[in-house]
Image (tube, rainbow, N blue to C red; front, side, top):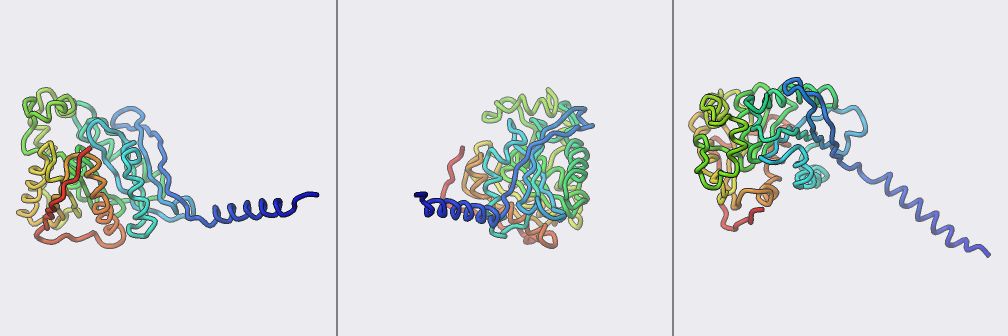
Length: 310
């Protein structure tokens, strides 16, 4: 005799699984693609992190352009765990839905220099491609920059240089140097080849000065400046805390509202992931309403516990 109970249970279980799949909220998706960059004259790879609701409806979303660090590429957003860290904040409604786009910038510092026109890659080619290809909010109100280390340097510089293009920028451990690096600077020796590729060998002083975020902090119109958030590990092994503190001082002197903090930690993604929710909430607050304001005198946060580096 056929076991009808087993058949019934199997059908019921399958129905339950199907119902659960249909009822489950849509998941975010990181896609990888290429596009042709006229500035570089070649195909360039990028990643796009699509929010859960992107697959349905015709809604348009703001975009965070995420810039990677030295010796990394567009895959950093997913590979380093940043996409996974964003997901629960988005799922709980703690940040609004937005796209994240990360482009492969090599070790270019995203400047127009000997390595190629990488600033144009970002500010002209990539943005035009994204606004043509995806359902995004076009223009300044739908754009923000995010960066880590080298990418933090680029995000701050471009935001300060082009406040008409981006409403906000948020960075961790931005590579802010108070003077051009030299090969005898200890911990930076392993990076000199990258500096030389981006800025020339020897380093082109005019290019370095023209692309210096610290210099742009003294030029930006306080009334037109984008919303800015930046932090750094107090034990950053490359000494980047000093440059970030210098940027804080310069912005404060110029009357540019911003949020800056030092947190315990070294240079690396252990540190970045420990503070990532702060920058994501900051950017999300801007997209959810008016550009996020920061206190006139930025609050510096110091804590005692040390976060280990990668």
